Length: 180
Image 1 (cartoon, rainbow, N blue to C red):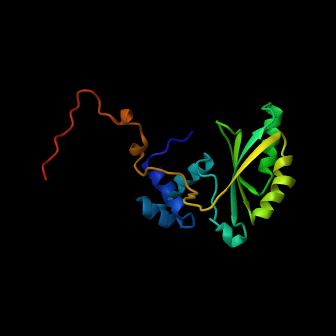
Image 2: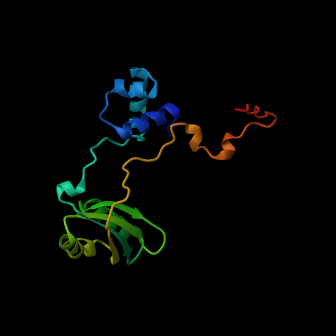
Image 3: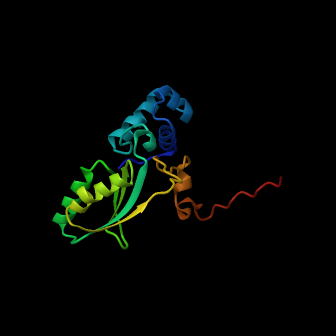
């Protein structure tokens, strides 16, 4: 596992904002020269921290106006059933996200289709035929309030650390604050 420092976090934040920038632009944005910046990016790619680069596409512009969040329950939770279900979900282009969950549902899926009729067809021709599916509860998204593609990062790696990890060693007093 790779240990990320403040510069790595800054690189990741900058790449999440704009992954099309040049190494020179990226290096300038994070306070490095090009070669060390490039090496850090390559190391994070090799370690799987950076899994890829892509464009953020407006789904309505490409005819996928309807977004549905659905809860899926399986008939049984055997290793074989779960594996078959997950493989079938991975192969289904309309399902753009799938999460194994706790609570009332076994899985939550996000489905993108052109309209409600397309979703009904998806249910009958695809979803109900997925291995092991016994029940699907659908919620149609009325408005997408927030849909961030990136992950939240703290530029200052110390900000993300638990409070106890940042405490001062015993015997070291905090410097007094100056009055303004």
